[in-house]
Image 1 (cartoon, rainbow, N blue to C red):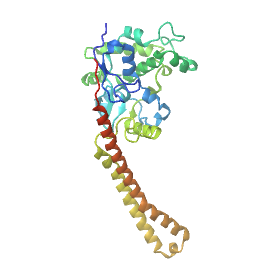
Image 2: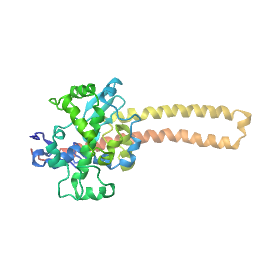
Image 3: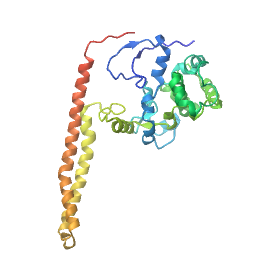
Length: 325
C-alpha cells in the first residue's frame, strides 16, 4: 500500500511548485490525494500555449539518458512538472523524478483512471477525439490521465537500456528499490497496451524536450511577461544588462561599419549624385543615432522594472500569513 508522506505547496493546477501569490500554505497531500496528483502532474501552463510549442521544440528527437550523458550534458532534478524534459541551457536538462505512486496499479485505478460513472473510458484503447473536450469538462480525470500517461511515456523514451536505468538510479530519478527487471516488465506492459497511444497523452509530450529560453520568449510575447516569461529569466538584475547589452554592442559595431562604407560610397563620383543612395544614407544615419540609444534605454527600463517588481514582491511576502501542515 502506497502512502503519500510529503508536504506540498498549495498553488493553482498550472503551477505545481510555484505559488503565484507568494503565500506558503503547506498542507498534507493525504488530505486530498486527487488534488495533490493534479498539482504534481499537470502541465496546464504548457497546454495553454500548446500551439506555439513547435517553436520551443528541440531539433533532435527524444533521446535516452545514455545519449544525453554521452554528449556531455548534465542532468538536473526539478520537481516542477512544468520543467520536466526542458533544456535549461545547452548543457543542462531538467528532469522531474519519477513518483513512486505511478508504479502502483491500484493507485492508478483509485485516483487516475476514470471510474465507472464516466460516459467514456480511459482504460482500454483511445479516448474519442470528438468527445475529448467534452469529456475533460465533465470528468477532471481525463486531463489527469493524459498528463500521467504522457509523463510515463517520457520515461519510456528516457530509459530504454539498462545503462539508462543505471544513470536514472545514480541521479535519483527512480525509486532506489526499483530493479531493472521490474522496470523492463513495466515498460513491456505499457508498450503492449492499447492505451499507450499519442491521442491518450497530453500534446506536450508529443514534442519531447523543449528549450527554456524559447518558452520564456513564447510567454513574453503571448502574455507580455517580459520579466518572468515561462520561468524567471533573471536571477540577478545585472544579468539583464549582461545578456542584452552585449548584442547591442555588437549591433553598434556593425552599424559603424555600414556608416563607414556609406561615407566612402558618398565620396565616389558614381554614388555622390545618386539620390536614392543619399536618401538611404540619410535614413540609416538617423537610425544609427536613435537605434542604439532606444535599445539601451529599453534595457535600463526593464532593469528598473525588475528591481521594482522584486521589491514589491518582497514587501507582499513580508505581510503576515499562516502555514498549515
